[in-house]
Length: 318
Image (cartoon, rainbow, N blue to C red; front, side, top):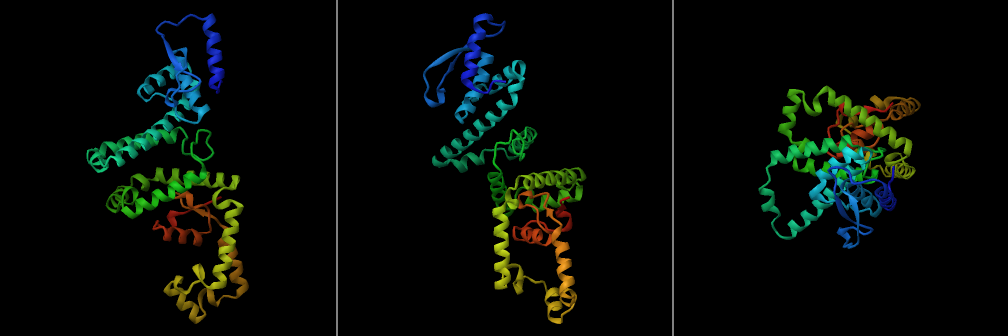
């Protein structure tokens, strides 16, 4: 499978010497070696099906989408029928093209002062349907799956985007944080409250955590582990954070004053129990970007971000 635009052009030219133009095919002028979007003027003659693949390979070579948006459906059909092995690469580069188009269009609209006017004309129901459809398709293609060969985002950008997006949605009370809609889904047992979704999320969370641990990314990186150790030591010495008096619940404060409960247990026993408790790692299936932590630590992280922190909101990592 050729993945270099120069090699593709060379092989096409060799093929044309021995093969005649297939029935239903036609010649097209493909900008090469510099694409039209980069002000290229030189062209080479290609069959339309070969031109479709060339656009994909040129995009990969230059790291910039060189596909023609107006003919993406035609190109997809040509690739499906003649070069199906290039279909995944085509979809990946097409996604990048649409992403770039959205960024440019959004910037131009914002600068023109017509952003609010444009938003008011959008049919929100149709927009939501389109987002769900495109989202499912992107997930199926593995564009947002860590470790998948088609993944177009780094772990760092995924984690950052998830954190920012979740925080904004929670602050505005929209999306999965819309309380009325959430209660309706809970009552009907659908969406994130369905058994099927729960199992999928748990498995996805386990897979993500396993991937992060194996590759030492995120909270499993040596850098993050060292930061955690330094913070823990600092909080213990200063009596802040986890060790601050105000972070103890009323019951815990009473037990501490009376020397009962965990404060009445011998130090050796408490240390052993603490080691057992902190040995088990859990993840939030709805927010895997938080990483795997002991249950108390994960609960605090969930609370700080306004996420649900009940037992059903965490899954133990095997």
